[in-house]
Amino acid sequence: MPISKNETSAAFADTKPHYHILDGLRGVAAITVVCFHLFEAFATSHIDQGINHGYLAVDFFFILSGFVVGYAYDDRWATMTVGAFLKRRFIRLHPMVVLGAVIGAMMFYTQGCAAWDVSKVTVPMLLAATLLNAFLIPATPGFEIRGVGEMFPLNGPSWSLLFEYIGNILYALILRKLSDTALWVLVLLAGCGLATFAIRGPLGDICVGFALTDENMIGGSLRLLFSFSAGLLLSRVFKPRKINGMFWIGSLSIIVLSAIPRIGGSEQLWMNGVYDASCVVIAFPLLVYFGASESVTSPVVKRLCTFLGDLSYPLYMVHYPFIYLYFAWVKNENLTFVQSLPGAIALVAGSIVLAYVSLKAYDEPVRRFLTKLLLRTHR
Image (cartoon, rainbow, N blue to C red; front, top):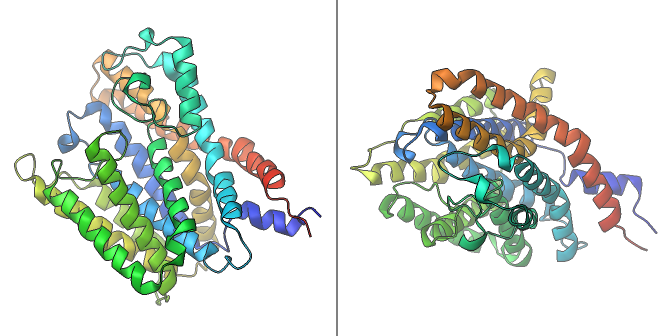
């Protein structure tokens, strides 16, 4: 017989009751990503970009993902198949992947500038790129229509969703079966690998994963492997501590850690690598640990955290096509940041509004439909 209403609701929610503080911190991190991307229009490299370490929010997302997936699913495997788990994750993740690709395609021809000539891209090429993005198939150089090396040139942040899927598949097939000791070893080795890449690598940072190059694939894989595994391990060993005000403390910490200027400049790349590794390996796991420890008692904070948590994923997935547009506007008009400030404010505010509308008018209804379609059970 079909699944019951309660079962449908549980499948749609996709988790046990939320850690509200973690929801709120995820939303704050998503907003810092938008601000980080804004400053790409004024940077000559990672070294002089504003909100310089905003890319580290992706590592925070990966840790949160491992923590939440472990918390939600570790005790379900006696009655849940790998296929059922992957269906649930597909339902949770993929509707916004498709919407981000469609928005990127719809806006593509409005984004022309010297950095990329959109007029040379034919409609069939754009349609092919849209399908690749919607199915999370990385664009090879021959299909990379923007010409800046991204795997997903219509909606750049989709690269992290590809890695998110890989993390979920690894969890279903391998990571969930590891003992705590084995998981500790994996986290330690992956952390050492990530730190080595950050400190001794050619970039002095871990802002990688978005392109089909050796350094991006190695660095992106290390980012996922450490952060997702560390989050999973946290979900297993977690014992709450008495703490208050963690939403405000954690939010301020994320903002400050993201906004710290580049350390060491171009002469001492390793110094910034140490900073990146310290944030990901030490600071972010602690933020997740302490954020999960506090039980929210304030109705205002609870509502704020719920709103930010609901907003975070749609915001992450719909804002970047407008970053391309903003970038083109700034370059075409030769604007300073101050001159472009009204447009920057409109972009952030508009992205938040669009994310909320997308959540309510598209993402939630589509997930409900897919839940009924894909998660029917029979007795």
